[in-house]
Amino acid sequence: MILLSGPCAAESRDQVLLTAQRLSEALSSIPSLGAMDNLDFVFRAGVWKPRSQPGYFEGAGIPALSWLQEVQETMGIPVATEVASAEHVELVLKHGIHHLWLGARTTTNPFLVSEIAGALTSYADQLTVYVKNPMSPDLNLWKGAIQRVSDVIGIRHVVAVHRGFSTGQATNLRNNPCWAIVSLLKRHYPDLPILMDASHMSGQRALIPSLCQQAVNLKYGGWMLESHFAPDLALSDANQQLLPEDVKDMLTHLNFRILPDELGLAPFRAEIDELDETIWQLIAQRMQVSSRIGEYKQAHGLPVLQEQRYDDLLQHRLEWARQNEISESLVHSIMDAIHSESCRRQQ
Ligand code: PEP
Ligand code: MN
Image (cartoon, rainbow, N blue to C red):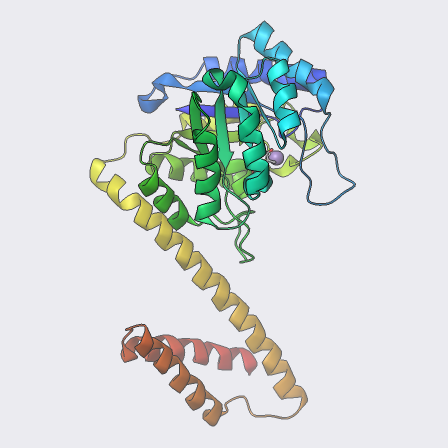
């Protein structure tokens, strides 16, 4: 399994060296269990940070490359950073860094990906390139970026990183997993290792362990986990960074002994969980609208139950159900339950 861990951003020489040291010590004491026998640890830190809005910490830039180089040379730990242009690639390679990742905002842009791929050629046989999924839930963009990097002649390793998508749907995660997209990616590239970036997917510490377990269940090749010697002081993504020792504890609590029969079901279960979560979020939204309607009815002296409206609504839902081969009785059970709860809220 591969573990990319380290801070969201390289903030100072001390922060980089201390976090790397603490991670290295914590991970060296991991008891060997199952698939963890061979844990390949790569220290990560963003040197240039893509921020959605201006005015936030954008990374320490070029000086941070020397701090990463120091980790690599003095501690013997390979290091990784994000590249978002051909110029970044050149600078990173000049500092002897051979693990590079393309962030979600870069994978979204085929021009940039081609430009970066072009800059990888000189050291291709020494490079491991991690390709994050794009911001939007678009399988072809992710596949396209992976393909452009894989086409670089002699490239050593290409690894996909699943960090979730911006879908606009309300979920308790920062980014929506859209598991179905990963199943399709796996079908297209059966041998491509996929890492779970539980930090950017969750956006909050408490949700990281279950995503990491999900990654084990789905036979991912490892994890990307942001960590910091003092997470609350982090200049970016503070809520999702773990203490180095907590990275170790979390990994040692994962269950690798899953029955082979259960493993086959894991991708379907992940999809069902995601769909159910969407259903519940939508029901909650619908109930909120119902309550607003209730307030309006009350203010205007209108009755709670308006039979004609419910009959019309039911006819439409039955028509949609017929088009999707869903039984009438299911429509009645679901709509009656939703409607009676709406009426209850409006009383
Ligand atoms: C990161 O890994 O630091 C990062 C910016 O991630 P993403 O591209 O997934 O947002
Ligand atoms: Mn981050």
